[in-house]
Figure 1 (cartoon, rainbow, N blue to C red):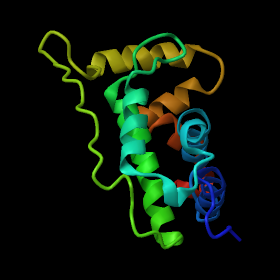
Figure 2: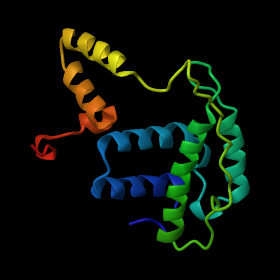
Figure 3: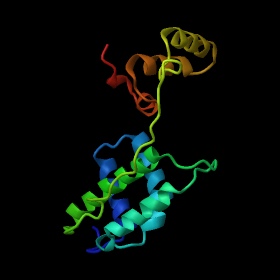
Amino acid sequence: RLPARPTLGVYAKSWLERRLDRGMKPSTAARVVQVLEQVILPYFGSNRVDEIRKLDIETWLGTASRSRSPKGRPRAPETVNGWLRLLRTLMRDAASDLEIEHDPTARVKALPARVTRVTESRPNSLSSGEVRRFLDAAAKEPGDAYPICVVGFLTGMRFGEISALEWHDVDE
């Protein structure tokens, strides 16, 4: 049972446990935990949920947009917007669960995405010949790389989805 006015850290732990109980994929849970622990909770974790305001969210967003990756590269707006989406979900659920009258993320705008140009000279996908060469190379390597790559290329599934597959998921 949650206290009447929990901190975001306390609420986030309860929220995540409920999500896991409802079947959140392990790969998704791992990413959520990483973002919560490394990005959101260091900034908001000790604040009571009902005291977080829009200005706090916007200040955090500005700080996050100027942050750098462990390799020293500037954070991509798409990355920071992903963090904001998680915070929005968390705060919307908190507003509903705790009967808070406001959601401080409601009118916060996401960062504008970078414009990347895909040109004829630089396509954004592999050609069939490139896929074949990739799979041929993967088949020569020991381990599970080949079947994982084949499933990924044939289905478009991401690694986290492929690695979570079980036999009962396969419809022969």
